[in-house]
Image 1 (cartoon, rainbow, N blue to C red):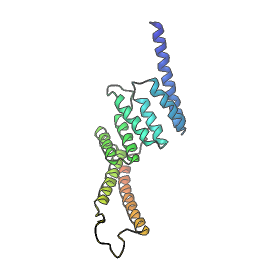
Image 2: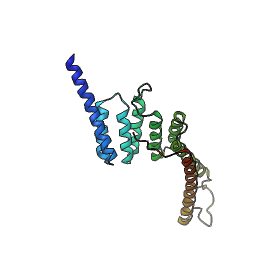
Image 3: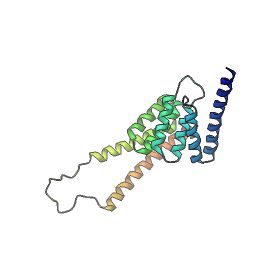
Image 4: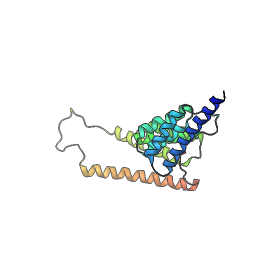
Amino acid sequence: MAVFVCVLVGWVGSWKRTLNTGHAAYSLGNYDEAHAAFQQATFENMDTPVAPYNLGTALYRKGRFNEAMRAFQESLSRHSKQTEDLPDLAHIHYNLGNAQFKTGDLESAIESYKHALRLNPQDADAQYNLALAQQLLKQQANFAQQPQPNKDAAPQAEPNNIGESEALRLLERLSKNENRLRQALLQKHRKSGYRREKDW
């Protein structure tokens, strides 16, 4: 029985050391090394949501958003609301929403941000990202609802396609609308407090 306790303590200590190695690498901006350490930690302890959450943040920083999404979902599936030393559920949903946003899945991102806000209604970052995702989704829907050219219609004297200059003008207008929304939300955010880091 004493041998089992010693092995278990050594195993937990090894998992913590691997996690600490990942934290040190992450804080130095070495996301490849952090990724490797957090990946190892997920294999060393399959019960905790901490390692997949940290793995998700490292993958996100590396621009591997689909993999980050899966890691955050794994963290959620391992999460137990009764344990104290765990990442905040609102943070997991927020980061999942960010990864979904980056992959272009705006509907899922909106749901993740809403879930984060149900858990923490004062989260200004989640409020901002939710508003931005909703605005972009609305713009996409408006663009999709624009009348499409009828292929069976008689040919017109002038082509119905917009030129490159018109496309650039439309993109600039969309960008200006997004910037206006971002500025309004940043003003609201500044009034509500400082911007915090979601990595844990």
